[in-house]
Image (cartoon, rainbow, N blue to C red; front, side, top):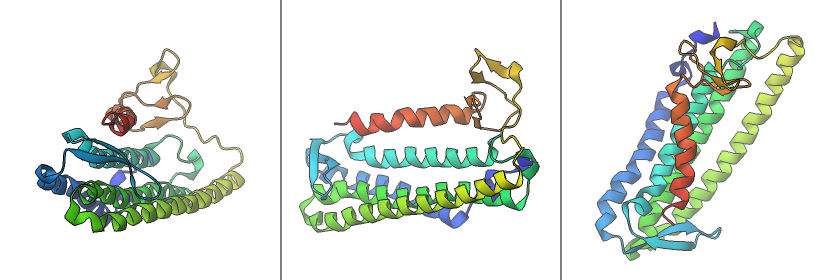
Length: 237
């Protein structure tokens, strides 16, 4: 049954090591160079790689990009978890079928694609704080900016490719099982105020129609990520 699927079944260890390494490394490098950074550090960049906004040096302004990277990684990982455990992954008749496995593989794959491209992009963007602020490293700012642009383009291109394949599998599901309802039944007794689903025995994070399973602590982490990201973007400015 679908509820027996685990996130580890769709986890690639080398990818996890790569993503974790690129997400952590900027914290150590920024901490090492923190005292050498000037009183003003870059906050926002123009499309041509030049600094658009400078801000006063503080822990928040220096570490905000790697913090944003961590928040993004947690967000993507939760979306991947949701794809594995969601009650709406595929029609019930497709449990453990080849089509559902393809759908799940693509659904989790797109989030892993985002994760490694985001790790590449935001690690380079984090280090650009050093490259743009310390004169002897200025020559590295342009390569770092190019890496962020290339990683972004690769991320978008890969996402579009995955979306195209997902739509193809979804059409095939609909064709083979035209009468199947993709939504699994939800116990109405566990829906409060007509909108809040709260079921401790359900591993799903996302629930069709109700959005979240609020009994799943990951739902609150997800909401915290959605709130934290814009705060990290705008508060230091």
